[in-house]
Length: 105
Image 1 (cartoon, rainbow, N blue to C red):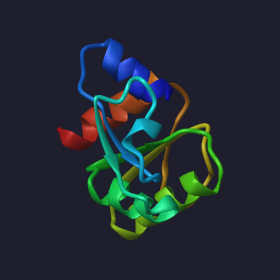
Image 2 (cartoon, rainbow, N blue to C red):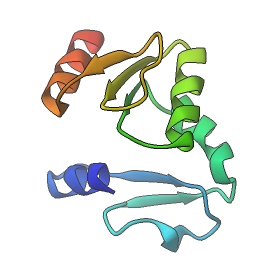
Image 3 (cartoon, rainbow, N blue to C red):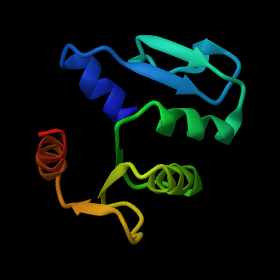
Image 4 (cartoon, rainbow, N blue to C red):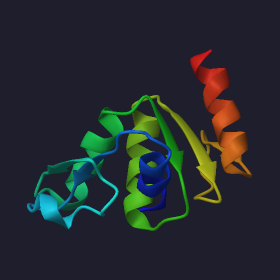
């Protein structure tokens, strides 16, 4: 929810690809909710729709998103997240943004 909140309050448009069937299950900072009813399977859609993944501390859902992204040869930047070969580490959100800027050139 923190990412959605930051983007929303900063004037960005947020899209939530939801595991539930009910679009009302989105947090209040999601502007465009996409209800999938797919549970964790929706993680492949999340990763497939992204150019870069920034992984925050999480559990097995985060781990699956990291694995999908690495298998798809996408850049994964971790901030205090899982420590997996192939991920780029960042200590702060600012450092992650700098890595992202380097990537997109």
